[in-house]
Image (cartoon, rainbow over all chains, first blue to last red; front, top):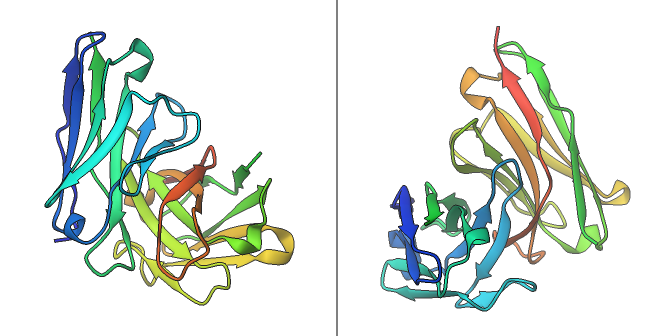
Length: 108
Length: 122
């Protein structure tokens, strides 16, 4: 399968921990990358590779993979973390890119 | 500072063509592969195409293969997307995006432009 599946929406209480997941067969072979997108703005890279934070991204963001599921964890979510989060990876051919459908994170 | 500035979007009738451009600065353009990614209004991200630094490898999403052509001019630090036989479902904000490497297969997208809007409608 060339698809990546994300939950459409997730909510978290301010200061609590939230995990956003991304599921797909290609994740057995390729790491997921994670992007956040705020309304009216371009996506921003958050996590790439095994668990590499983009420069400038707070250390409350972390990534992990188990089998066909990649996860983005925010430990101590802040109001400014409210955004749409997308995972992506290569597809099973390795020559194309596939994005998950996105998860809208609400910080309560 | 990496900057990617798209241009060329607009309103076009179904079946017509449009050429998008992306001006890159702040990095050595000919060292890196590049992508086009689009986002329909209110929808998620959809990868469109990839080109290596040398144009040695080019890949397309099935939804645009045979209609769209990606190219680059390293001397002008520019990326292009020629879009032919446009359909209403091609309506989207088109982002120019930089790959983390220059490699022959797509890697991580690490920088994005602000996008240019393409509207396909009669």
